[in-house]
Every structure is written in C-alpha cells, then in structure tokens.
Length: 328
Length: 289
Image (tube, rainbow over all chains, first blue to last red; front, side):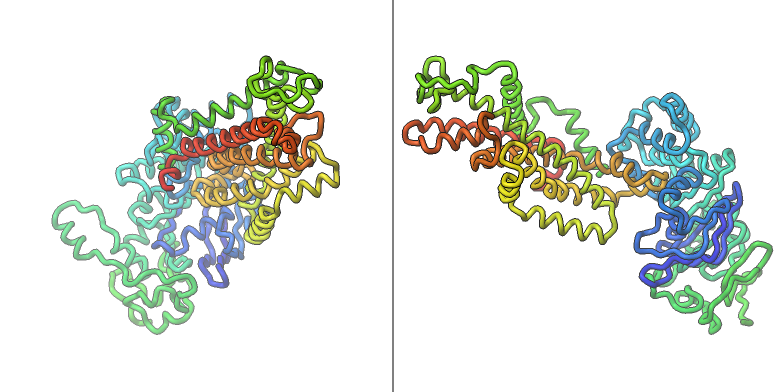
C-alpha cells in the first residue's frame, strides 16, 4: 500500500532522514521508535508533504502506486485526510479554539466525501460513537476547552478517520496525555485499525506502547532505520546497540519488589544526547555514544538480516545469547 | 491561545452590563447616537438643508426654532450637522469596510505565503503606511475631480496597507499553531484554512482595528472636505461647514464651534468604542499593558 524507497530529507544540505526501504501493507501496524530529534516525525511528515518549508525531500514515496513526492499541493490535500489520516501530537493545541467540536468534525467529514447537511450530521454522530465518546449532543455543542485532553484526542481521531482512510499516522498521539488516558486511546487506535482494516504508522518513543499496538517496529536513529523487525523479536532480542540502549532505558512494568530493584539497577540512560543536524559522525551514526563501537563502525553499515524479517545495521551486534559478538 | 479563550469565555459568561468597560459603554452610546442621527436624516430634518432663508441669517445658538442658530445663508445649523453626520458616516463606513476587506485578504495571503513574498509585500506595506494619505487625496482630486468618490478612494488606498499590517502579525502567529498544521493534515486547502481557522482567531484584532479606523476615517473625511477635496455643495459635510464658518469667526464663532464639537464627539466615540472592545474581547492583552 505504502512503499518508501530511498527517501532522503535534507535541511540546508544536512541529511536529517534517510530511509532506504520501508513498506506497509493494508491493515499493517508499524511503530517508529526513537529519541526526540531522531527524525521519526520528519519521516512521517514527509509522507504527507507537511515537512518544514526549508526541508528538501528526494526519493520515492508511493501510495497505492501514486508518487507522493512532488505531487502538487492540491492533489496532496485530497490524499491527506481522504486516504491518509493524521492524529497529531498534542490534542489540546490541535483543535481550533474558536470553533465548536461538531463543526470541526463536520468539516473533516464534508471535505472529502459526504455532502448534504443531514448525511454529514449523521456521520458526525457515527464518528463520535466510533471513538467511544459519551453524550454526543453535548460534545457537538462544546468548544475544545470544555473537553479533557483524552476527549480532545478522541475528537481528533474521529476527524482523522472521518473519510475512512487506508492509513492512519499517529505522531506521538498519546505523549501529551495522562497515563490513565493513554491506555484507552491506544486501545481505541488498535481497535479502529482492526475494525476498519486501516494501516497504522505509530510514532512513539515508548517501546512498551509500540509492542502493545504494532506488529512491526522500526527503530530510528539519526534519521536512519537502525533496526527493523517484528516487535517481539526486536524488543526481546535487540541486535543493534541503540535499540538495546532504548530498551534498557525504559522502565518495565514491575510485578514485585525484586523486579523494582532489578529494574532500577538495570535502568540506564543513554550517554550524551542526539547530535544536532549535520553533526552526526560518518559510518554508524550512533558510534560516538555507543559503548561497544569498533573500528568497522566508521564505515557505512548496510542493513543486514538476523532472522526472517529482522534487520539491523550494527557492526558489533548483540547475539541471541546476549553476548557481544566481537569477531568483527 | 486556549487559556486566552478560556479566560475570555469565563469573563464573558459572568459579565453584567455594569461590569462592561466604561469606555465601551460611553463609546457605544456616542457611536449609537451618531448612527441614529444619520439614519434619522433620511426621514426627518428640522429644516430643508438646501433652502436659503436670508431673513434669518446669523441667528445665535438657542434662537427660537433654531436650536443651534443659523449660518450666513440663514440655513439651520442643526440640520447641517445632522446631514453632515450622514455624509461623514457614509464615507467612513464605506471606505473602512472596503479597505478592511482588501487589507485582510492581502494580510492573510501574505501571512501564508513564502518567505520571499512575505518580505517583499511587508516592506511594500511599510512604504504604503509611510505615504501621507492627504497627498494621495490631493492627487486623486486633481485626477478625478473633488467629491465623495475622491475622498472614499483616497481613504481606501490609505487604509489598505494599514489594515494589512495589522492582520499579518497575528495571522502569522496563528498559522504557527498546532491546530493549523492539523487542519492541513486533514487535507484542508490553504484559503479554507485561512478563512475558517485563522480569521476567527484574529477577529478580535480586526474588530478593534475597524473601530480605530472608523475614527480616523471621520477625521480624514472632515479634513478632506475642509480642504475642498471632499464632499462638494450641496452635500453637507462637517469639514465644509467648518470651512465656510472660518472667515466668519469674528461675527459668528458658534458656527465653527458646533461642527468642531461634532467631529470631536464622533472621533472620541469610535476611539472609546475601540478601546472598550479591546478590553472586552482581549482581557489578557489589556492586563499586560
């Protein structure tokens, strides 16, 4: 359905995102994971043509055979919302504060497919029902500030699925929400994706959340996919040092006190921070923060296969037994 | 933005008449009175505004039957003022509305345009603001002949850059908000977003600007007709009444004072209204000042 090939995003000559190949088939849910500044948002925004004006995008993004890169703004606008929906990052800032919810959803509905006031209104109610919002009459009359963050995100999801898109892009859709609400929104996204057979690109920095929602995960660093594979395989047996660092930086759900103690002792932050654009090292982009870097890391590292469908680009990968494979 | 709306909503739901800003009430009364008088002039004036009555020349203020006295042709001054109000409002409303519309469209276009267009048009707008409007009016009057058309056209040309500049700043700010990006993300096209999402969020700025521009337009109209560029006889206008009274200052000073006061109250009314609206629509900004 969506095929990305040799996508290269540059800002002022500096490479910010480079994806050799990524494919999403119908109904497939894929997670993009990485730290802030790793380029994951840049990748999804360039799919929609919403990258910053200073960014230059080359390569190929094909959606159902249509090339999206270089497509005129008017045709892109039809694809946005119509075929690809977007759930934005911060729901509290993503609704127009001067407009009632009902009108905002109706706008999303009528823009692409449905005409006629009655049909639109019926569809608005249906959508409100789809995203499990209670009391549609009140919601329709409300202004955004009268709803909670979780309710606002449900409204935004309703708007994103208004025209039955084939692909939904959720850009850190739960990051700005309370933990208690996060779970509900995740369940909703998962359920909608299954019900409507929608593909889902789920951008997050939380591997646990990605495991819950997605089938495949791509770990992004420095704008590159450093590891790709089925979620369980990647999270349980990470090959790339960066994926491993991300996983150990994540607090697991503790079941007893021993778990808590173990978690706290195993919890590691990643040394240093993501370099600014244009300051990434040659070869493996993670090597100056990596504790296991070897000489070979200075050269370009292509994606290599570990297992069926599990790929990584690491010169000194973690082997399945968990020991370092230092023969390289 | 959200907090701002929250606050203004909360304030608005609780405001009673007595809690409205005093400037808003006083300005509203003055402006409302002015509009009533102007509308009244279509149905009724104390005397016919054009008919001369030489027998009753230079009657002082408070004369029987002539509340504000008469001028050198014996015409009732009150009638002149009422007819002047009509002309003054006609010119200022028409010119302000047209220039606001064009200016807002221009401002929105520029705010959403690329960096180059933005720079070029913004500088051009600055130049436009710097050109003295009276000069434009003089040139226009020579080109198309003096009259209300010249005055209106001059004010429109004068005000387009002013209103565009007022729109560009807030529009750029609103365009950088997340909900605008979200709107583009749902496949809305540029002008749809500009009208449905940007415009409502900058409407308070535009409303306040409109009332300030009304005040300026009234003053400019008076100035232009005083200089002989604006309304021509027999159309009554405050500026022209003032001009005709000028050589008679020593014989009948009240002939100058009355239209002068009318202009003062009209301008004051619109300015107070603008101030009051700002305080009412945008309490946060007012508190900051």
